[in-house]
Every structure is written in structure tokens, then in C-alpha cells.
Length: 209
Image (cartoon, rainbow, N blue to C red; front, side, top):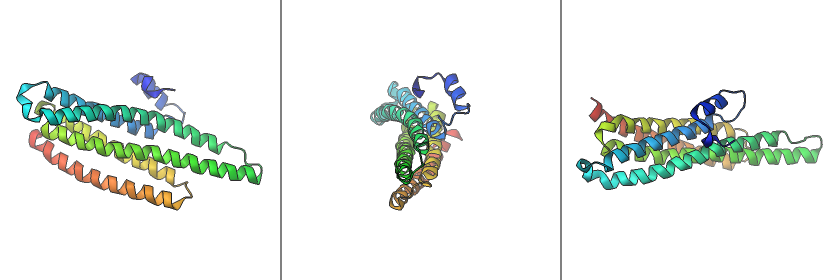
């Protein structure tokens, strides 16, 4: 199933079904794609108007990055669903003999690592998104300030949900060095996200009050 080819209604219907995919990881990536699209919209509403000439260059960069991020998030939305299918397939492997059990454990370990890697990549992309959304808040068309602020909040939601998925997936991984590396990166990115969120909220309030 190509998730990015579904209508909004089809996606929601599939999401609410009893199928395990798409799930929260795909939704996190979709939130990122929506946030990127909003950032691009704010940039377009800025570069198209002569009165915002001073921020044209920075908004053109926001637009370019946002468009790339949108495509990246949509790919991650699909990858999250696909990798979970791999995990389920690994758990369904036979376990009648010692060799089969060993092969199954190895397959599960590798599948879980891949399943953790996708939301971790979504988390990394969310940090890029919150930075360009911040730039859109600060240098974008003030009439679209709430759209830029919405992009920031979507980036934050993407980060939080992606971190949940990293954590649940690494909980089944035996390779403690891999687990520790993932945990460290998740913590560092979330800390930076929190700082950026506070910075952007302050900037947005200048226009909203």
C-alpha cells in the first residue's frame, strides 16, 4: 500500500482499522510533512511580495528546504509502515528447532534495529523542520504567523511521537551499544527541540499579542 497515494479519507479509514499499519510512526512523519508544507506556504507568501524584500533570500531557503523535507517525511511515512511489516514477518518465523530459534532471534534483532532507525530519522528531520519553521516565524509574512507557528508545533509533535517509537523499538533490542547510541541521540535532539520551541513561542507571541 502506497500511503502517499491515499486520499485523506482513505488514510484515516485505514489508520482506524484493526491493521497495525499505518500507525503512530507513519502519523508522526505525516505531521512532519504537513509542517514542512505549511513552512513552504509561509515562505511563498513572503517571497511573492515586494514589501518583504529584506527576508526574500532567507525565505527562499526556507521554501527549498521545506519542499525537500516534505518529500523526506512522506518517504519516512511509508518506510515506517514497511519496516513494521518486516518485524511482524520476523516474529512469524519458525521456532521448532534450536537453529530456527537462533535464526528467528537474529532476524527479530535486525528487524527491530531497522524499525528503530526509521523513527530516529524522522526525529532528525523534525529538528530540521523546527529550525526552518522558526525562520518562517521570524522572517515570514506576519499575516501568516499562525501558520508558521503551527508548523513549529507540528515539528514538535513529530519529534515527540517519533521518540516514542524509537524507545518502544529499542526496548526489544539486545545490542546495548546500539540502544545506548539511540537513547543518547533521542535525548539530545529532544533537548534542542525544547529550546527551539521556547524561542519560537516567544517570537510568535510578539505578533499574536
